[in-house]
Image (cartoon, rainbow, N blue to C red; front, side, top):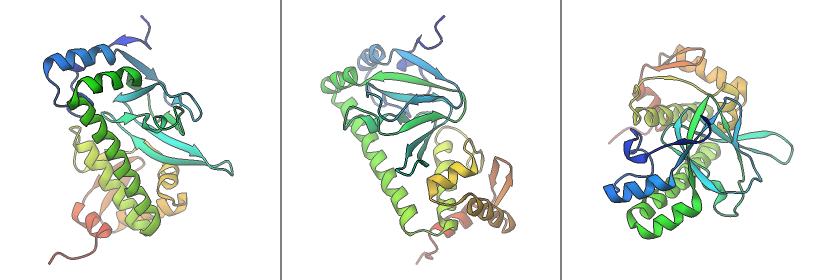
Length: 239
């Protein structure tokens, strides 16, 4: 069996409420099944796509974790995001028909392949699908704005606290714990994403641990005081 071409069906997928087919009628779901026809498996460290590659499809993460990165003019890798199960990768390629970043698997992963030309065709037929694609694009814009705020105005403690709160919130939406997580990314990758040096990320984790806000054991993190983390991000007391 070709492991890179496995038939899938959105209608029987337990991620359908997190992914594209949310709110579609049964007959619409069946038509979408003909579009989202393949899965692709990506080994840890491999690229799903690379900057400069021609854009042809969006990818729904079925399992695993990814990071997106760009290479800066001076040759450094800059992490631009982390994507997890139920999220869509590849929107960067829509504008110019070429990908502007690399998407690299942080662990063995599997994605559903959605050829964009077929998705566009179906979106014109089903306004509910078109609306949901627009919502996904809007969510990415809002997330980018959030990152700009992180990098532009927040101290190191605020950046890391906001990152942990966002990560655990997204994981909780997928049925995971509200307080425990295993980081799939390295501290260096977190630093690259947050605009912090590795030493600063490690020092801030240690500070949070000393203050009893989190417990950290290598990549395992337990949030012991969610309210304290929220207060770090937004110290303004409620009226």
